[in-house]
Amino acid sequence: MPEPRVTSVSPGSMALLVVGVAGVSLSGPLMAAATAVPALAMALWRSGLGAVALGAYGGRQVGVDISGLSRRTLVRSSFAGLMLALHFATWITSLRYTSVASATALVCLQAAFVVLLARFDGEEVSRSVWMGVGLAFAGVLVVSGVDLSISTRALTGDLLALAGGVFGAVYTVVGSRVRRELTTTTYTVICYGTSAALLLVACLIGGVQVWGFDAKSWLLIGAVTVVAQLLGHTVFNHVLAVMSPSVVSMTILLEVPGAALLAAVLLGQAPPVAVYAGLGLIVSGLAVVVAARTRAGAPLEAPIE
Image 1: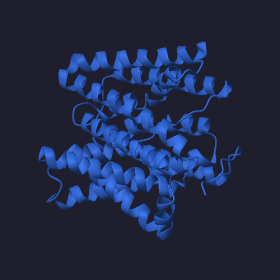
Image 2: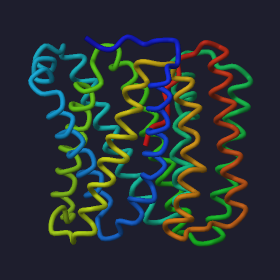
Image 3: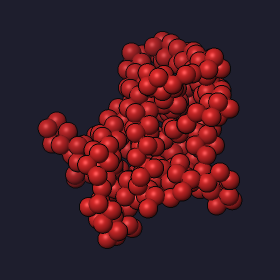
């Protein structure tokens, strides 16, 4: 049975949030450092190793759960895997073109895209939420404008990160609904497994190298899998089911300054000062969105890296 959602925030849940934020904050810098690993290959290994690790953890129960799934739930979980594959493919590729700070902030616009998806689905959206969305996208214009002045390559990275945010929004919306019927382990095994299978096909068709990397590259692949996929991504998949998504959403916004700081320290990436102004607008706008939707009692899906 899926885990029941609780309303109180226990010390254990808060500790998981801290671990999750640290994990996703390291995600961008680690993948940007793996320059010898093609973006699609990194996405493949991250998804595939995550699925294998969680399948081993869940053991026979995962197989039992999957065999008893309805066709509708299985299709939804697999569709979430498709969206995750597209999310990883576009976002990880963006790290090859633009700074970690810009890419992370832009992909975290998932929260704003979730609002747009909700509106298309017929949900009423308050003026405060629209103000927050507008503020966040004003930050996008600042970041993209600065990056365009640097190079069209940086702007290409920004656009890829934005696309990653769109796919991430669809992934989190679908996943949040499926998670009401499945445990974290069963859902993530299906989702990550589907993502890995699709990415493998893409790599084979595109002739992308997926093997034969040096020791440093394999170490970075392993670090991304453990730190970002298991301690970051999977932890947030779990806490979304057991605590308020609004708290999770607000906490994950710390990924933006966290990734920027870590990229500056570990990779020596120090974007122009104007970029940090844009990052501030994006985070502020998304914080307004989360707070306003919380007051309105609307469901929130957290942006996850």
